[in-house]
Length: 146
Image (tube, rainbow, N blue to C red):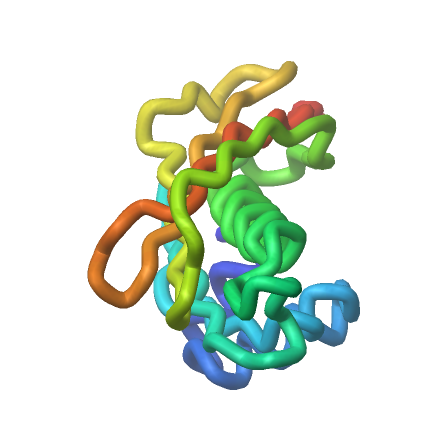
């Protein structure tokens, strides 16, 4: 079992999210809460806050990129075989609507073949509190098997 998944299951979403931000401090800028983590799926909530807004008063594009990368990275980590390694290689994003509320990033790797090495495309959608898709990303994760 992935060390991240073991920690998530042991300490719960609040404590795990704080630990994740200690491992990768930049993610603390969005104050994330990893609410769901299992093979093929990760969900990260980001509260609306002035600190992550743009000149329009909506959630900044890069804050959504951070949430997408965190969700995709956590999901990748718990989905790859024991001993494998991964690193993000690229990200293609689309901004679909203004995000004026809390947002939730959902990384769904259920359709990805995690048993082989190479580049894996991880889809991530970000939804507002009404369930409207405001952002989508395709994140390329390079997986190396041991």
